Length: 274
Ligand code: 2AM
Ligand code: CA
Ligand code: CA
Ligand code: CA
Image 1: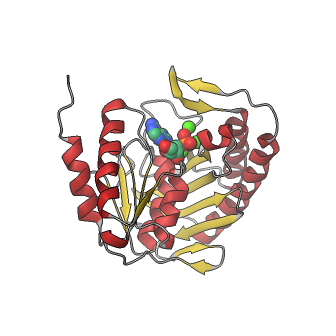
Image 2 (image 1 turned 180 degrees about the vertical axis):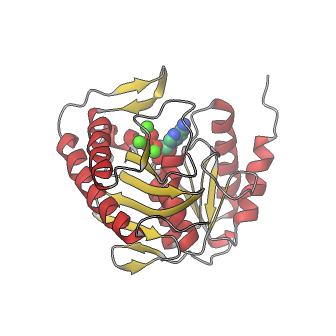
Image 3 (image 1 turned 135 degrees about the vertical axis):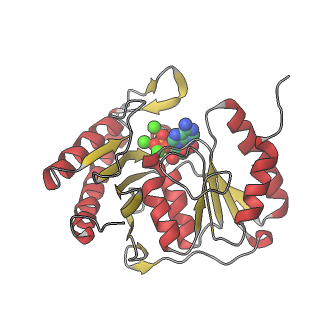
């Protein structure tokens, strides 16, 4: 692939500053009365003024710094939009963990990735409440503040497995059943509600595996880059290397990847029709 037409470190600096500023903006809404709305008639798909205002600010900053780049964002995306490989494209999730945010659970993040030629070049995930900046560049490693991240080497028996719940009913059930099976054989299991942060936790070696079967490019772009830069594996639920076309993402330390895929496959092929 051709190199990015700009210095990735410049894009990284802009993405980091923008994510931190978005975090401040999100926090300015955290104490007030939130008008929580739902999207597309799905009662579980929440959005607030914090999501939309942070999205506007991020898009303004990124397009001011890089006027020729595209932006693919959760809050302005319309179904059918495609990521073009020949134009550098920002993948933006202004607030990842909206359910946590609206319920007052202090665990959510801002996720920004730069995508080009089918590959991630820059990834930034900002943990708003803990003030941790996770970031990385293609070939430049994965970092949390100033610490280099490396995935764990734990086997399944000592692993902490993490998952979040797809909203689509068949996939939601498959996740729940796979989770129930895995919890019997691993050390323990968690569900935190921010996909972006969960990928960072796999990169950091704090979690050994994370899977979610209902994700979009802006959920995975940044954190997924960090998983790979930290030496981990990132595929879809069939084991194909993850791309922006996939809705399922499985991130692990590599050692337990097959076991997770195998367990998921068992429940994805089950027939649950009554
Ligand atoms: P969000 O908060 O930005 O919407 C929770 O399940 C995690 O998965 C969150 O990071 C959430 O992102 C993300 N997610 C995005 N789309 C989802 C979907 N269709 N079903 C389940 N989780 C989704
Ligand atoms: Ca959302
Ligand atoms: Ca998200
Ligand atoms: Ca979001």
